[in-house]
Image (cartoon, rainbow, N blue to C red; front, top):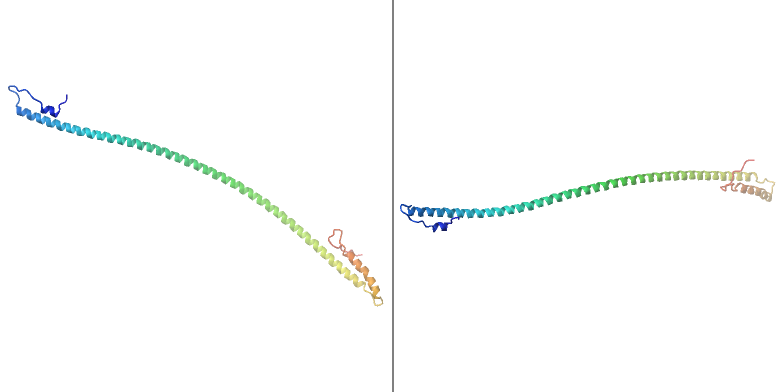
Length: 201
């Protein structure tokens, strides 16, 4: 059984002959009492500090656990963010590549279409140029025929002018065949494009 300061204070010893000095015993008991009280006080203080330390240790452990959980969650979140970013980057790169290929194909098709259109327009240009040249040549031939016909009509009219001994009526009659012949010379050719050039007899 552990002694307390109170037990030591109330401790009584029997007296005997040739025993210890009562004063020395009381002084020693008092000293033991004070030492025990101090030891108990220090023990209580140490116990209190131990409890505080244990409480602080538990708090630190909880903080460490919380921080560990937070760190684990942060690491997991960071891993997910990196994975998502990587997937998004791959998707963006894939879409960009598909867009590039599609735009290249579209551009090539457009180039081919433009080349075909240019070829068609060049063919139309050449055809129109040929038609215009042919039309100009036809108009040139028609104009030459009409000029020649007019010149021949005028020449025949001069040859058929009446002499001094021909009357006016005879002169009129002699000019009518020339007019008829002039109309024949101005008749359209077989193609319907204008008068044919009269052949020289």
